[in-house]
Image (tube, rainbow over all chains, first blue to last red):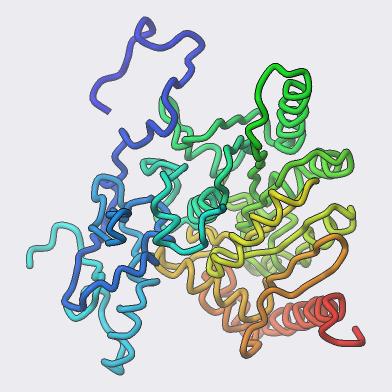
Length: 116
Length: 314
């Protein structure tokens, strides 16, 4: 939000005129961990899109491709990485518990503000 | 032709819940809402009971809903949607508006459904309004800071059933609301979980097209109240399903049917251990509560198998 509105600027009755205007509110600032792509290539299965609570998986729907993360709204919960079947496969092949920021993964959760 | 239930096809439709809502990171409620709204192709009107979903998606001057949405009070989401539905059908009948095959949905948390909104819900179901009531069940009053509700399981720590030297968490079992709603003999009742998303979406499609009142009870993990990491939401929901604590089934015109049978029924302990709200149950003096909960889960599961025609004696 840039500036608070005065009473003259608010619609009569205080109604909200536009549906879905919450996109203007950026919840990305809540994030402690950031999703980034790792080495394992994306198979565009859209599982992350299906389970993201914040509609923050960007997709190129026409070409059926996963296109990235909406970091203005992503709260960094890490659900995308937890449902990613490529991540599951990488962990299975490694045969050990991997850190959430392991570079071999498809979707990694990297600590916000940490330099690599 | 309805959109195929394939994520790539569903992604081609506009998202009906926008990002920028203020539900906690890792909350399952927006997952449930997004999956349900994606499953329906027709126009939708939503009524919302007071709760996390209502409060966090509509913080003034913003709203995350891209569908007509109304909230009036805690207890009356079902009456509100019943009124909207009646008004719509009346206006269509009098030729004032064209019939666009609008679907009516009500969302309520477990507080607004099991306890506070139960009377309004029961009434609206009995009157036969054509709407779908969805309970996103996070098993306590999470919005006001985790107080026990009728949906809270035995032994869970909440701020009004605090585990300590006096009591070991909630002392009662949760009530089986899905079965209570099924006793209303309405056309469609189901229990679902967001992990089995296709099952949930198929249930939503059956519910909106059943020609009468319908009810779906969806388990919705709350990482603040259940006490787990934000990324464990779906893993823990899956464990609730696989331990048969939260079986997935439907009751269509009085016929009970199991829609998901776990490959191996896990002990309920596997689900309890992952959540901080049950941590105290693993102390030696409280172990008997785990056995009691397991016995209750088994009893309800056996009864369900019998009702669904999977076994011949309960």
